[in-house]
Image (tube, rainbow, N blue to C red; front, side):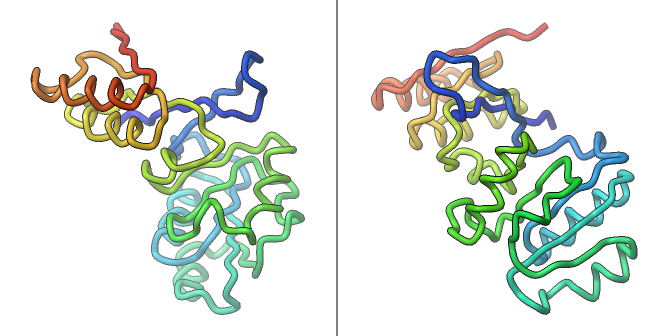
Length: 196
């Protein structure tokens, strides 16, 4: 499955905007230091995948004994585990991955995420829902499989996020009409492009 790309709103309107990736291409992580926020099942899976891809893994959680601490130690022996979301954890980090169990709006995360943005460290979202809900995302490029175009484009329209969607727009005409209606009824921008 192709990852969706998004446009960040860190720049003022009209200025050049930074293109950031949504869900991460984990195969490109070799040699990077990755900070995983949250150590539940998803955080553990992220840490394991990053380690398999050749990354150095750091994990942090608000809990002194997160549920997957033992599993992390056993499955990713080189990983470090910290408690809290101190910005100092970002030293030497190239990417931050956030577990879907953590809200991107959690005030405890704000200083760390702000510092990551200052350092130009890309962040990744734990799910498409988080990506769409993120306040720092202006618009979304949807290159997902055709069968997923309507579902995620309509979710973007409902969140007030403009979308540029690859063609074919939808699996059938009625589905395409639902997409167009979702955007036009809300006054949200929508476009499509053929990628060859």
